Length: 396
Image (cartoon, rainbow, N blue to C red):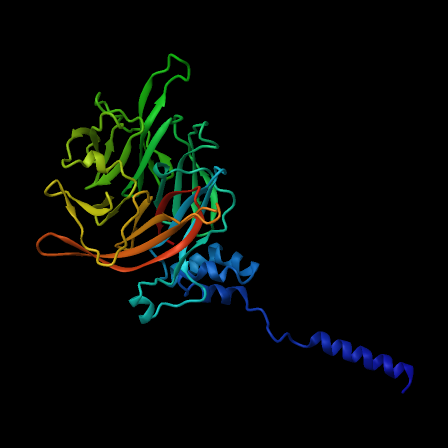
């Protein structure tokens, strides 16, 4: 064979190799989006580990348009806010399915959930605290964002749980020294306190503002609380029966209620230590009923009888450790309860486990509410210095 023929053969072989199709061709992005839109979001953290292109598609606006068109919107995605000391910024996790386990009848019998808390790939998140975090739709609002505990701020940040990105919202009109936020009918109600002058002569004043999440505007016509006995410094808030309740500071514990339709404040008495229970961080609202964990037991507030009742049932639920931080959330009409438990010291490397349980609710004819423990499981292990801030339910 001549040298010219050899060159032609090598060229033909090279061209053929270049045209040879890959045994694993990449799927078009629009086809992947169509597939992802039909997959439960509980599996997204696992899918995001496959490749960078998967991670990009899973947080793209096109995916959530496709989910909306296919009716795949989910109402019960749970986001957990943790702070790892000594760093002040917050770290976010979401409840998802374990990548190597599916829920079966056998795991259900053993109360194993098949769930785990997975870290959400979010850019550095601003510092957050329990009272400053609320969820509306697919967004989590961080009210009064501060760079450090010593620097109060009027800034407001929004975490978009579809794209896992932060954006800025209109700031509060004043810089709060303390605040507590709650949600009612798509509006965020904020109560707290501020100083009209940062000098020694400055006086403390009550802060009350309302943010419309649809228009993204702070209401310019809010009526401040004029009740002289209600001090909003270090207050706690809740929305019950269409009213915004504010429990004043630790010393006085008075309760004020704002009636939004009438634009009126009332000094009220909710009875049966309502003012004490609203100061607990272990609470959630489901179908206009407030559930709390008090001294290790579940209770709920009866707005008709103005009294507290115990949640019946709960067979199989472990006892909460005395020092546990307990957080509740509305998980599609069920109670999702999270708590932490310190592990025994092992060579000085102290850690604690975060547990989760899901409780189905049923109302009886005798006006009692029964809770059925559907599962509980250990979902994350963290350093003992980790601070468990809050659990929020978002719609995505």
